[in-house]
Image (tube, rainbow, N blue to C red; front, side, top):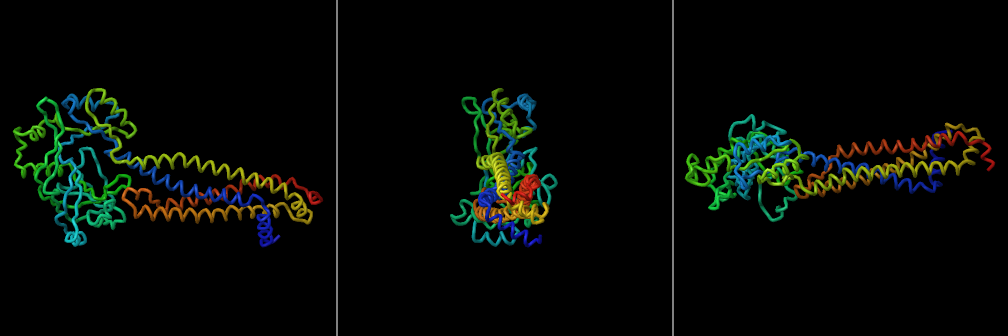
Length: 453
């Protein structure tokens, strides 16, 4: 039997197959589930895992408001199970926005004449590490060095950018080797400190100090994680740089931190009045550390999810767990329906198969015809499902890519999508093989005399 004849017979059988449309629909759903749901699961789960590894996601804020944090107290807390580090928060760790005064980057400088530009400067804690994707890290750089995000946008213009949608981001790696001069917004910076009030209680206070003009050398670019909102304008400096900026602000504000004539200088020179970051050894152990330290009578903030949004956690769990169940359910249903359909159709065709055998066709020729029939249905379903999946991913990528910064986390990497598309193709071929194995067993039992029925 020629290949053309096999193909012709197979197509004819498909048209006569009562379950062909059902099989195609189920197969299409399987392809879409494998590609789209699995791709979304990968990006959301990766984002959640990435956030869990962040320093601040594993940290708790410890303050002296309930009792002083003496050396003995710090040592006691540090010995608590699952506590990895305790870092002093003294320095530039308030919410500070800095206006960009000047830069030797031509593109940014040309925009400064038309628009205001600002950045948020974050000082790293003692054990906090920010790895770079290009250039040098802060550990290997001199004071007054900084690293910028891989996608950078410091400008503030019209109201449409309040939600930071459809921004023309700057490639942070191209800024390496450039300098940027900044000064605190409205000429001041905020420093958080603690003081003892008239009731001998420790309270948190804010001091607005005169901001120095700071010239920072851009030495590296870090990956701007979509899982952490707002970081496209965050510039990081080392702890030494942060302390130097704070000391310069004290000098400009005529505050002598070497004496204790003011509450803020007393705070600076009294470690028991400082606030600390308690860093757990693992994200999943934060609640245990919180309960243990709280039971000791210390004030510790139960804010383990500093950077991770509730939406990210929800979608990661949704696509990671429910998605797997949904894909498995569709796969099982698809296999059951296709196997059942193959068994039913083979039984209904006994007379035709018997006639073909009576005419001299061999089992392998008839089996080839049935095989092509199965492959036609599943591969056509794969093509249709693949087109639908590609359209869904292309549409969502377009929406999220030009949406808000936080939504960029849901942009699916096409390499991941095509990987799952290849997996879907393998599964599309696997299901017919299962069906063919069933048909082969039944085919061998059909005799030429069935043609007489």
